[in-house]
Length: 113
Length: 223
Image (cartoon, rainbow over all chains, first blue to last red):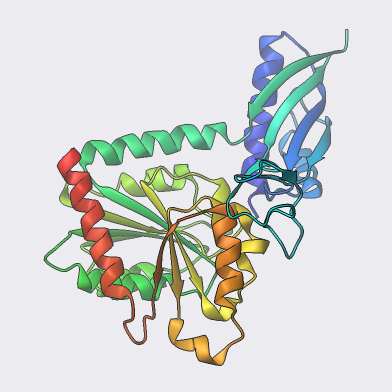
């Protein structure tokens, strides 16, 4: 489990941006999580409710946008979603692909008052 | 007035910044460093035990071992001949991060070493997301784990510089299709430097340690 330390980073970033904007309160956080980023939504919200207490972000709701894994074949440039059993390009069977989506883990925006 | 502020900040930026500091510190001290990842039981510590004696009189080795609890791994590294062995207990965290490595680096007089071996917590998921600042990342896979691991843990298999397939002596006894395994590896990490090893028979270990010596000396000649 690493969601606790990650949630601390999240709080730090959110509070810093809110203070820069002279906001009094953070009400919502919009987070993007790729399926390959190995982060669990429920667990982040659980820790958030504990660590955000007595900060300007206390009680804020976390909103998650999940991004599924997507690869691009190095040979034919086809973009495809890998399955559980197969990573190889379904079109040309070519070796080599790069991950183009699914590793995101970022705070996109916050709602403040 | 309620309003929305755009942030777009990578949540692990703080870790990445400290990883860069660790990298700079290792560069300055001229220490070649590797981060070893594997699932629990793949043979990371056994590999280190077999590697360190083979490097005797060739490289001065320090080891940093990450584990949730106990100092079993660093004790084994020290017994194998590592000149310094530091244990990091993560207290439940499933991976090492750059802050933990920074703390361990502070306990070492870095210029006294040629090679730093960092043994991460046994886990194929999380360590891939937390950069440490080492020069190379080495993944130890093992035959009994099964041939589907590249498919299940693409983030880890994609990001490594070296792949060690360990416990090769067990290949006749377990269902492990090397072609299927390598096919998964090659999609994500074409041409990755690979060693087939067994810590029981000694297969492949000389090639692996020669590679370490070569890398460390190339590294020294540039710096």
